[in-house]
Amino acid sequence: MITISSVTLAVVLAVFMRSFQEGTYGKMIENAIGDFTGYVQVHQKDYWDDKTIDNSIEVNSTLINNILEVENVESVNQRLESFSLASNENRTKGTLIMGIDPEKEEQILSLKKKMIKGESLKADDKSIILGSKLAEYLKIDVGDTLVLLGQGHWGNSAIGAFHVKGILKMPAPDIDRQIVFMPLKLAQEYFSFENGITSLVVKFEDSDLTQEITDAINAKIDTTKYLAMTWQDMSPEMLQQIEGDRVGGLIMIAILYMIIAFGVFGTVLMMAEERKKEYAVMIAIGMQKTKIMAISFYEAILMNSVGIIIGIILAVPLVFYFNIYPIEMTGEAVESIEKLGVDPVLPTTLSLSIFVNNIIVILLITFLAAIYPLLSILRLKVIESMRR
Image (tube, rainbow, N blue to C red; front, side, top):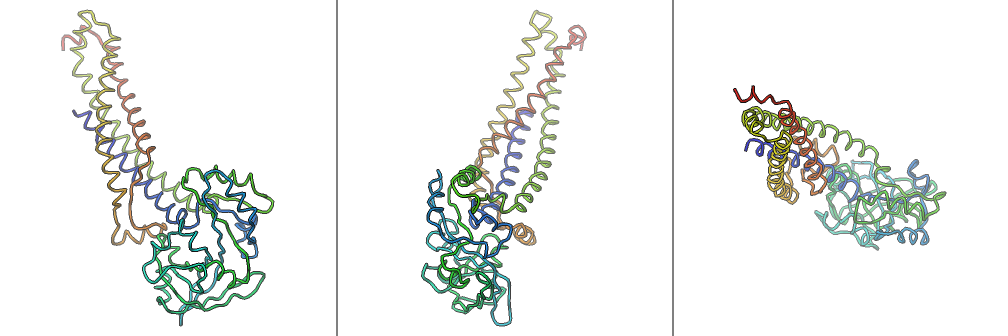
């Protein structure tokens, strides 16, 4: 019972901790990548090294059709992005202007769900919507006018006063502090770049296919002019941040595994020592050591398997619950979480690999722990053990 209980607790803790950790990374990627930049984008070849509107491309139906021919690609959304200075009364702030097709972008950005005040955009609007933190900083509300000043295509001045149609809350705080959305046609007029775009956002469901789809797109397009990029290439800082934090999490899990290993080994050691006399009697009456070793090994595996099964049965409902109802951070923790560009919530992930990997590690620990009683039986001195 001690062995089964220790393995059960180990499985629950290991699965729960890793599920929370990977769930947080998933939320971070979803907020900053999946729900904003997309997992794959296509640009003019030099655009990502020098993100100016002059390195943009004109809408090309052949290019778009080539991308749509790639398996699993659902749609291609056009965007025009650049920076401008936003001003309201005596407050100014640098902002990211993103020209979009509101109807198509609803599949990725889900702007209607994020609206907290006012209305969402339509393709022929002459209005804008902006992030809630930006609106709060500029002290601007729905119905007010926001003045934008920037640089357009080929050095043209970009100046305009735009009616604020709505305010939305973006999941990533860094984006919420600087984003201004406007219809694509309006953005092209503002930047004096008719029919111009800076990126094509490729929409598909399974993020695990990111690299495969990127390679397939680059095989179909003219890579002397255009380049498809993954989110890992576009956001290496986030990737490094996640990998660095993941190492810390793995160290914590490794410490937990060490505790588990000592707990399992301790119970196995106790069982082996207490049963030496029993083993000696069985050998004395003619039973082979190899059969006793096999029985002992099967017993250890059976006990630990029961512990793993019970642990999974207990862990699955917990992981499902906190995936649907993630923990909401409060107090000072909110600020530290938001600095990572993540909603202040801690969800779990339902990834099957979390369960499989932890089961494999714990099974490996139990296999290693089961070696001791086998060696103990192999080296058993029958006469001495029977006199105990």
